[in-house]
Amino acid sequence: MLKILLVLLIIVVLFELYSLMLLCRRGHPHWKILRLYRYAHRGYHDKPHIPENSMAAFRRAIDHKFGAELDVHLMRDGRLAVIHDASLLRTAGADVLVEDLTAEELGQYRLEGTEEHIPLLEEVLALFEGKTPLIVELKAERGNHAALAKAACEVLDRYRVSYCIESFDPRCLMWLRKHRPEICRGQLSQSFMRHGDGGRHSKLTLFILDHLLMNFLTCPDFIAYRFCDRHNANLRWCRKVFGVQEVNWTITTKEEMEDAERDGNLVIFERFDPRA
Image (cartoon, rainbow, N blue to C red; front, side):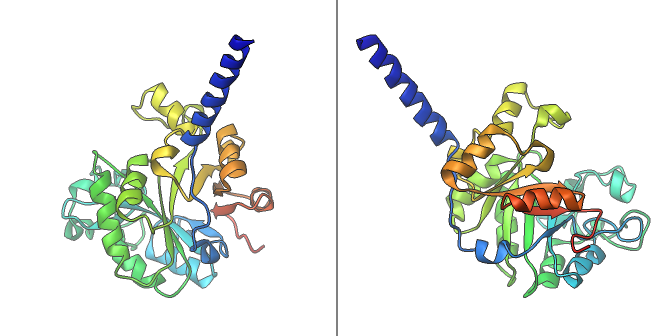
C-alpha cells in the first residue's frame, strides 16, 4: 500500500511540474483592442505589385481595416529594419545580411523589383499611429535578443500604437517579462521537425520549442502557433488550464479562418480577402 501511495505521489508531483512548465498569463488588458481585428501577414501585400513588409502593404492593411503582423531585425547602427529574412537575397536580390547594414545603407535596396524600400520600424509605427493594431515579431540573430527587445521597446514607446510582441526566441520574451512586463507578449511556435525549420538546433531544443516547455520562463500572454500544427497537446493544455489566447498563422483560406475563429483564435492571414 505504501508503494502505491508513493507512486501516486510521484505521479502527482510530476503532473504539477509538467503543468508549471506550460505556465501562461491571462487577462492582459490589451486584448480588448487586439481581439477586434484580423492581422495581415507581413502587411496586406499583393505580389508582385505590393511586396511583403512594405509601406504599401501596411497602408493597404489600414485602408481595409486590418491589423498587421510585421518582422523586425536589429541593424548594425542600432536601428530597426522591418523585413522577414536576415538575408536580403529573396526580397531585395542582394546577398547581404540586414544585421550588417546601417539605416543609410538599407535605403539603397528595393523590394521585389518594385520602387518600395525596406521600412524602418519608426516609419511603420508613424503610419499606424491611432489606427489598427500591430503584431511585432522580433527576429533575433547572433545572440542579440536582449538588444533587439530593448531597442524595439524604446521605439514603440514613442508612438501611440496598439501592439503586442511575439518571437520564436524565448529569450526575447524572457527579457520582456523581466524588463517590460506590462507589454503583451507571445510565444511563436510550430512543429519545427515536421517542417524542417529547425536550423542548426538540436532535436532536443526543437522538441522543447515545439511543445512550449519554456513557458515557465516566459509566461506568455498568447501562443502564436502554425495553423496546420494547432492540435499540439501542450498548446491545448495551455488553452484549457491557463486560458491563454491562441493566434494562428498563416491562414490562407476562408475555411481555415472560420475554423480558427470558431475556436476563439485570432488569425494572421495572407493571399485572400477575409471579408469576401
